[in-house]
Image (tube, rainbow, N blue to C red; front, top):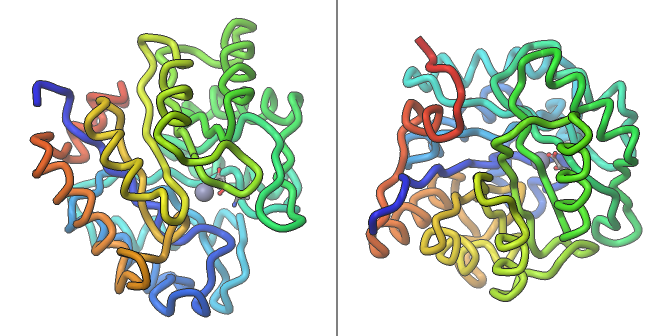
Length: 278
Ligand code: KMH
Ligand code: ZN
């Protein structure tokens, strides 16, 4: 397949998934480091990072992020790209959510709209919140991964880009299958991808049972793929993954079968227009 190499992002932890759902979900600094290593060894070049207290409760504390990022770099010497979440967990304040930007990461997630988020939870991102987060990312020299859960959020990002809050080429994360966002059928992904500017890059996140069918579509379409415990704890129907590495390995198998090569972290930086790590 004559396409750009595939960037695999591992969403190793998330803010909501628990050890009750899968005992391999990492909470401690050591567990987060080990899960990042398993994903990197399997072929991930980006870690989308949430962090937890040791008891599993989600936190956006900068020092906890620093400890986890240091542990990840200690265990993964090829300089993975670490992308902290600024979404945090539902109900967190903007000030709480913004804390990891103080560490000047290369990238961070930028959520571009409000939606229901499973059950009665809501994930609130008003227009002024998105503008504030985008400006802070620009100040800190952080490349936003524009996270969208529905088509209207793409439109919001494009409107803010027109107003100068975001600069191109834009990089999106199309998240499909959240209970409250767009569903995860093939036509949904086609619609979302066709709604992006021609020079944009995108990664695809399929939630739950949509993870691997949408990964296969993204591989064929020239998109990139995110997979990890944040998005699914299952390797296949009824089979829980033993690690994030197992989930990444499955994406690598799909890419190999479909003839698309997997990017190293250095190649991912070039694709995304990030400065090299050296
Ligand atoms: N935990 C969700 C409420 C992000 O990382 O930017 C939001 C989330 C998005 O995970
Ligand atoms: Zn996240």
